[in-house]
Figure 1 (tube, rainbow, N blue to C red):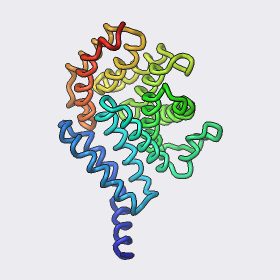
Figure 2 (cartoon, one colour; figure 1 turned 90 degrees about the vertical axis):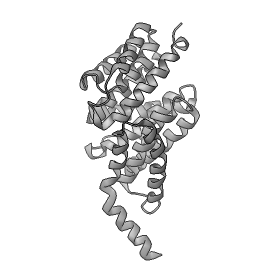
Figure 3 (tube, rainbow, N blue to C red; figure 1 turned 120 degrees about the vertical axis):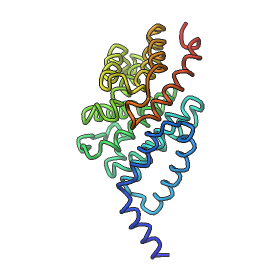
Length: 269
């Protein structure tokens, strides 16, 4: 048994650089049904490997990325309660990937992001994606509001380190956050528009998630029905191939946009 555990440990050390490639290969998959089938099994495999090396940063970061991506693409729209639990799972993996710096992120009084450096960006980024997504799904709950300040501080740190990371998703996250929140909690639709436009310009409007969330959050918040349909129509006409590393995300953006269109009567008054 000792020998086997030792072999597992060595195998994990050797394969650590390959872990991020697992999730990256999924995001490159254009067949969204194939990806939907593959992702849960892949994530459970990675969780099994984690038991042999609980502090493996590459593995923890990959799990944060994988659970965030799976929940955003396949769960959030249909089952918000399940999505909330999965986002917290992703957030906690990301925080653990940050080592001793991670636990302090939850405590706004002790929050210090000065020690977070460029080498921590990927772990912080996926922690922030999951955390802010969970908050946006639970803005009616005091526990989510209480964590808003810390989550926003993490998002601002990501923007400071690399606002163009993952095709400008930090810009999109800030646009969502500023649109979703009321002015009482720091919402600002004018500033949100600026961030969404930055995201669109960065990849020449080829990262379709920018249009989707621009429509879903900003256009709905300001009740701009014309902009809402223009953005969703643009997604429907967009090609997924130009950004091959996010073909799955662009493909799912088309599916989500079509669904959002069908629900338009629920959003405008």
